[in-house]
Image 1: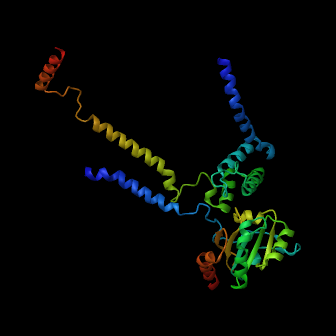
Image 2: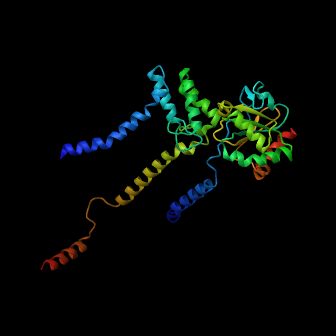
Image 3: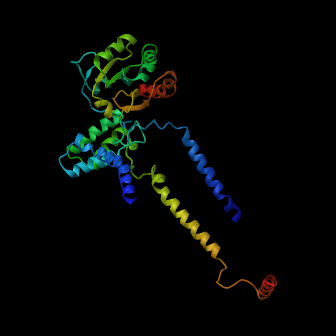
Length: 177
Length: 160
């Protein structure tokens, strides 16, 4: 009995080591979203291309779509832009943009120069919808189902790998429903 | 000498005092009508964590999101929201993560209980060690008559 007790500190140390090691690989920047399973927060925002057109969460109804948070001030958004074009043109994925804390002219110029992967864009210069979504850095991409319910959140750049491994399985699942 | 020392210490402390005044400067930027609300606002800023700069509270962080959060907390406190309402509203958006004092549930049980467990285990270890080292010690010398005689002999020989 005493012999076994002697090894106890070693066992505790090993168990603790395994526990801590498992935590090493996790990305601390990736936070749970409190919104998963809940409807997109209420909003009334103007369309980026048409200041007179007021958009509400109704824009998400009837199709599974991606909600992509972006801004011209965000370098990582530039990185993922080509991949968003690929998703929109080659894969026919409906993407709704949330132009976050940006300037309307700069945003329109960006879309003219780089191409426009978005079905439409919500213009959110104050970041109110972004705040209600819990956006803490762009880009972020959400999967919204046909009823306008948030199903998935990805923080960071979308690229073909992220699409295939993380987003597409969820996207297809809700598309089949 | 003493005066010099005191002067020196005061001089060293001055920037600290200034920093203190600086952090209280929030009162100027975010005026609230009652001291109680002022206090609530300050507590909330210290208890809420910035989602972007994860090791800072929203009072300290310069991240744009922290500023948005400060403004929202200010708006809610101004409208008379109590502390719990504000914390709940933030958790609804950013998750349990934003609160430096997470609620006690299955996921956070280890976090809350670990210090208690460590202390209890430590106390048990100390008790066991103390008991063991004291075992068999009834206060009387442990030499037999024979050994005592031997020792006396040795001592005598030494002193000669």
